[in-house]
Image (cartoon, rainbow, N blue to C red; front, side):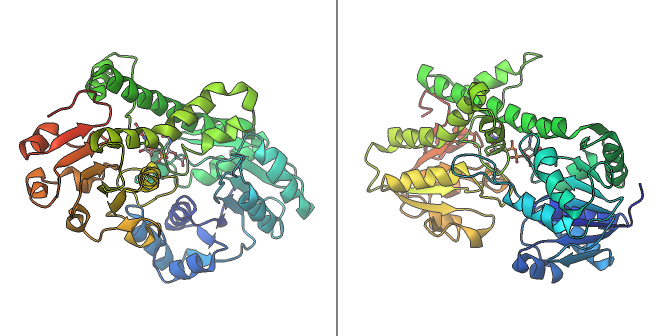
Length: 428
Ligand code: SAJ
C-alpha cells in the first residue's frame, strides 16, 4: 500500500514524534489534537512537552511544509490514533479518548484507508471497540478498510531513537491489514517489523510493561528485606546480577509514569480472578512511597511536624519532565500529611509543579533550614552535586538517597549522616 498523506490523532509524547518523523520522511501529515492550546502552541513552532531532540524535529517537520497542525482530521490514506488511555477510579481503562478519535475518523474514512490504534489498550479493544465505531461510516473493517493495532514501545527520554530503531509489532484485524501496517511503518522503522493479530499485539504491549512492573516490585521488596536483615540491597543486587540468568532491576521510591504504573491494571481489571501476582506487584510498588516515609521517620523521629525536608526531584523518573503518577509526588504528599514542611527542587518543568507543593527556585533555596536532604529522582544534574559545597548551606547534615545516586563515603567525608534506601546498616 502507498501512502501520500496520513493523519495522526493525539499530539502528545507519542503522536507528536510519530507525526514529525513521518513528515521528515516525505509524507504529508496532518497532526490533530482537540486541545486548542496545543494546536496554537505547535503552530507557533513551540512545544507543550519536553523530550530530547523533539523541538528540532518538530520545527524541521513544520518547515518542510509536510506537517500541518489541526483540530480536526481530514481525509487521508492512513490514520494513527495516539491518544491517552487513562484509568478510572476503579482502575478500568478509560477508552473515552480512543472512542472519540475513532468517531472523528469514521466521519472522513474512505474505502482502502488504513487505521492504526497505537494507544495502550485492554485486550480486544481494536476488535470490540474501535472496529464497530469505524464501521458506523458504512464501511466494513477488513473488507473496505484496513485496521491494525501497533503499540508504541518507546522509552521516554529516548523516544526519537527508539521510534526508529525498536522492533515494531503490528497486529492486524486480518492479515491484509497487518501488511498494510507494515508498508506504513517501514517508511521510517529500521527495527524488525513483526506481524501478528490485533489482540496478540495488545497483549504483547501489556505483557511487556507488566513484566517490568513485577520485576521492579521484587526489587522493591528486596530493598525492604535488606533493611530488615541489615544488608546493602544495591551490593546484593550487583552480586546476584553476576549470575548469567539473573537481572534484578533497581529499587526506588516507587513506580510512576503513565505506562508501567497503569498498564498492568488493564489486565488485572479485565480479568481480576486470574491475576493475583500482577495485582500484588502493583500493591508493592504503590506502597513504596510509604516505605520511604517510614524510613524518613526512622531518621528524623516519628513526629515530623517541626521538621523541614528538602526534596530533590519530583518527576516520575530521571531526566524527563513528566510528573504523571510520580512516586516522588506521593512521598511529598505523605510527608505533608505528617505535617512536615517540604520544600522541593525540580530542575525540569518548573512551571507545572502542583500548586500544593512548595517549590524552591534554586537548590540553595531548597536547602535553607533543612533537617533532611531527601533525594527522590536520579536526575543527571544531581549526580554531580558536591557534598562539601552543600554542607555549608544546609541546616542539619542528614541525607537519604532513595535511588543509589550518591557515594556514601563522599557525603560522610563532608560531615553528613548518610542513609540509603535498601541499606540496613547506618553508614556513618
Ligand atoms: N523504575 C524503577 N526501577 C527500575 C526501572 C524503573 O523503580 O529498575 C521506575 C522508574 O523510576 C519509573 C517507572 O519505574 O518511575 C517506569 O520507568 P521505566 O523507565 O521503566 O519505563 P517508562 O514508563 O518510562 O516506559 C515504559 C517502557 N516499557 C518497558 O521498558 C517494558 C517503554 O518501552 C514503553 O514504551 C513505555 O513504558 C510505554 O509507553 O508503555
